[in-house]
Length: 155
Image (cartoon, rainbow, N blue to C red; front, side, top):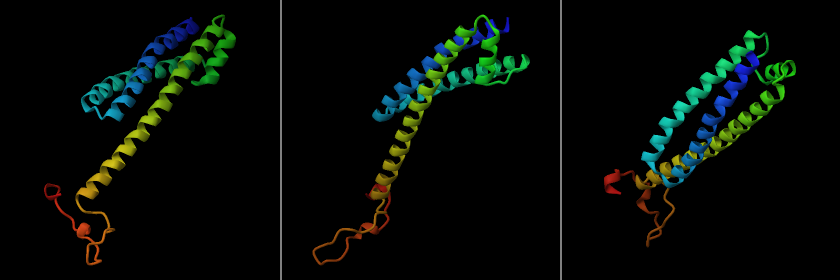
């Protein structure tokens, strides 16, 4: 009975996990285009999927613990050995794990894109405010006054 329940739990997580992966890929495109309204929509939907998947993961772990098994892959493998649904359990678990691993990779790439954009924006602001060290020379051979801080309205 528990093996059937766990199989259904895993199968029910595959669709939300795929939706999350699709959202993360869409987020990558929106990040490169700096489409803020789309990013806000993606974030809201992404958060709800993450919460749902987290809750389901906890339920699966609790179900394994209630059977006296460890709440990890080893617990699923032990259950699979004891169940006639073992091959299906492991197959569906592999599908879910593959999607979640891909989510993690895309999320890491998105994080790097965000860090790069933050760095670029900070550099642009520093240039506009005159925070760059003087590297240019005027006609008299003196350094230019770029080192003077100024308000963005004066840039």
